[in-house]
Amino acid sequence: MIEIKDLHKSYQMGSNSLHVLKGINFNVSEGELVSIMGSSGSGKSTLLNILGMLDEADEGSYTLDGLPIRNLNEKIAARYRNKFLGFIFQSFNLITYKNALDNVGMPLYYQGIKRKERMEKSMHYLEKVGLADWATHLPNELSGGQKQRVAIARALASEPKVLLADEPTGALDTKTSYEVMELIQGINEEGKTILIVTHEDDIAHMSKRIVNLKDGVIIDDTTVVQVKAKANV
Ligand code: ADP
Ligand code: MG
Image (cartoon, rainbow, N blue to C red; front, top):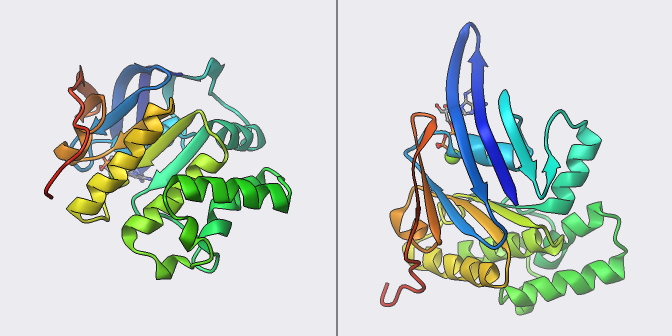
């Protein structure tokens, strides 16, 4: 599903250059649930943003579902992003003045899907994350965990090949974090390829594979025994 070879990325700040990714190689197969770990500033978000086509590498190759991702014009990049990728963020990024159902429907709106079908699909995904009864509520009427569930439903609505989640539990308490991760595990079990950035060890161990970033390179890439549920939190 994802193939990256010798990826490099630097940020320029005035006359200074910060070399963040220094030759990253890794592949992700369909159906994997991978956590990308590393200390703050190690380049996790930079890597995820490149995978999400929100940013471009300086060097190296990236192939997504067989398509080379390089020097695409913004129109094609946007189409690929819509079609292949779903995003989940630490801060949920919901639209504050739209209710849960309409938030879920946003990617479908941008795909030009008509209102009736949009509503049906959005409801289907809200049900999937256990929030059917909250469809007409605004984000500020929802708990953090519920907001992240809405964001997950929104990410699923466009039926992407890959879900990318940057610190999806970073703004949640421990118990809610595990619940959200259990939801993500369930979605993965249905076949979705999912990459998560986290600096929390417990969360990473709920995935199937942990990739460790340090000083711009992968220092460790291992299959783990997946922790399925956390009782008594
Ligand atoms: P992580 O997500 O692992 O905390 P990031 O990928 O966000 O790390 O950042 C890696 C490094 O790159 C950090 O030192 C950060 O300050 C720097 N950085 C990130 N984005 C930018 C940017 N747009 N411009 C300049 N420096 C950046
Ligand atoms: Mg980050």
